[in-house]
Each structure stands twice: as C-alpha cells, then as structure tokens.
Image 1: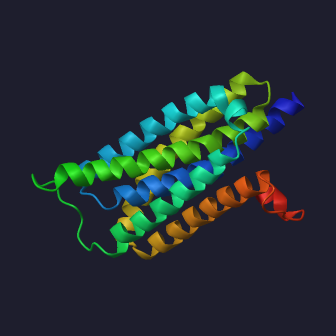
Image 2 (image 1 turned 90 degrees about the vertical axis):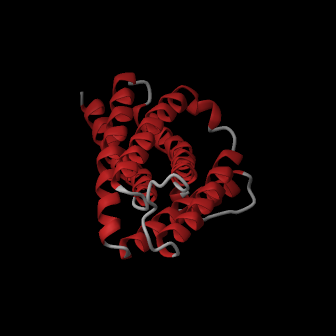
Length: 203
C-alpha cells in the first residue's frame, strides 16, 4: 500500500510538470486566434495529447532505446519556439477567420500543436510509465490526469497570454529549456557529451 501511495504521488507531480509544458505550447499557439478558433485549437491539442499518450504508453519501452527520438524531439521544439516567437511578437493582430486566411492559419496552428503533442507526450509517458512500473491502473490514471491537466491549463494559458504578452517570453523560455534538455539527453545517450552528476539526471 505504501508503494502504491508513493507511486501515486510521483505520478501526480510528473503530470503537473509535464502537462504544464504541453499546455503552455498549446495555449501559446491558441492565443493567436480568435475565440472560436482558439477553442478548436485547444480541442485538437487535448485530443491529440490523449491519442499520442495512449500510443506511447504501449511502445515507450521500445522507443526509449533510440536516442535519436530525443534529438528529433528537441529540434522540433526549437522550430516551434521560432514559429511561436514570430506569431506572438511579429504579428500584432489576432488572425481573424476570414475566407482568405482562415484555413491556412488554422491548419498551421494545428500542425504546431500536433508536433508539440508528439514530442511532449513521449516524455510524459516515459515519466509516468517509469514511476508506475507494473501498476497498470496507476499508469492509466496518470495518462488520464495528464490529458485533463493539459486541457485545463491550455485554456487558462491561452487567455492569459493574450492579455499579458510578456508571459509569452516566459513560455518560450520554458519550451526552449525542454528542447535543450532533450537534445543534450540524446547526445549523452550517443556518448557525444558527458555530464557529471548530479546534473546528468536533468537530461
């Protein structure tokens, strides 16, 4: 019982940290759209987060063998950081759902959210699966909780970032940190880099 309780607490903390990263990206992408499209972007993000988490939950052990997964994920997040920087701080007006701009703008937002979901869902599942071990009900609980947190936090971040642009800089810094951690972790797996303890555990 004590083991299950400790695992339960670990999973909650892992989900809070991991879901926050995912939610920040979805919220930052959604903040650039009119309210109607903003809700749709968040809906797509939450749905994709759930699907990818389920898929990775069944294949996490296999995928974790490949260090290039971390490298690819880190590079993709760097691309997202640049795209969000352009959207948030170059374009001054919210993209309106006009006949000329609705479809390309909306789809570009969906693509960014999907890429972020793929990368961060993998990390989230690895963390939860590592904590849950053979306790499959706790693993399922962790996956469901992470999706709920992503949806709730993304809605909040989207509204807050729209009203407080400075928060966007903080969000970009958080995403950039995750990207760097993934890339360094991949390079460590390939033994290109060596990080001394206790810093190695960060990657």
